[in-house]
Image 1 (cartoon, rainbow, N blue to C red):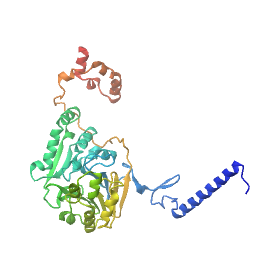
Image 2 (image 1 turned 60 degrees about the horizontal axis):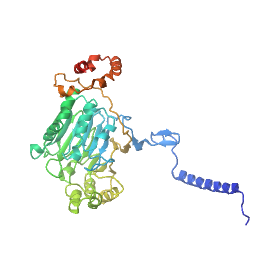
Image 3 (image 1 turned 120 degrees about the vertical axis):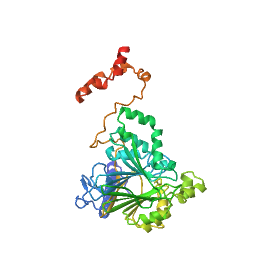
Image 4 (image 1 turned 90 degrees about the horizontal axis):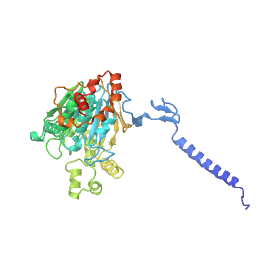
Length: 435
């Protein structure tokens, strides 16, 4: 055999071989996955330079107006009490076609996901608490203060269950939250405006079954008892436009849920990690691992049995850390007892519900979202309130530091028709004379 000496010839052979291989691969894949060439063929999707990007995969907040007969549900928190960057604790945003917005639970860490939806805070003023564990209400402070500083013009409204005693109910919780946050409340009331710092609480009887707790603008919200770690927890349903969304909160399988979650379009229910997963991944002892999964929460198998009984159009499992080590074991447990439509929830998953179909997507949202202005403006500060900064502390202001901003503020005042005396307080002028 003659030895090839020319390197160029060897390179040519390699290039030809690679080209043939690529051609075979492309031909094979094109035959099995033909490229969609038109938006019409893709069901109304958006054409790009390389084909079609299916709009069914993503939801861009603020870009889609709901039809009048449509509901959008966004998972703003699907995880556990332990903090995790990828999953906040329980929180669900439900938007209805009439423009209303409802927050069901607002667990620790969930406010950042709510903010990423870029909804004016004047509409994020209705919170329904299933119970008072912090992984279901721990970010009430972030919504309360964040909405206040970002333009919410009115009080925050909270609906929640009573308890065995007044001290175990929602009213007591919110009243004492405001005591806990008293310094925050008093100082913002003086510097901003007092009305958005209030919390209006509607406490309802946790024992009542299928009671109406909200009925406005075509939206009806009902509650019934849940069984968790003590008296008080409830589950909710929201009805709008002939459709029904059900949210379990935290509960074991119970007769009230089975009775009242029937004929629902979307049913959101907890499905806990398995006892082995709790021991291995969550560092729980065996006696707590099985109880957490299966004694005061709902196991995957029990979740499946509930869903195969109530037969929703679509089931959503939540309240677990959704990752490689967990989701398959939970999914397999559910499939032992349920074979219907199912989502394994994670944060920023979105479902659009209409009478004709239910569409699941993921929200694509910015990490650095700004608040969006609404149609209403906050009332001005209440000038009759006592300044929470004493004269002794005010006297510590350093005048040269303030003088450095005079030129900038003079220009700002001119552009916005603000008189200099409005931003140069009397104390500032007195300090300049003294110093």
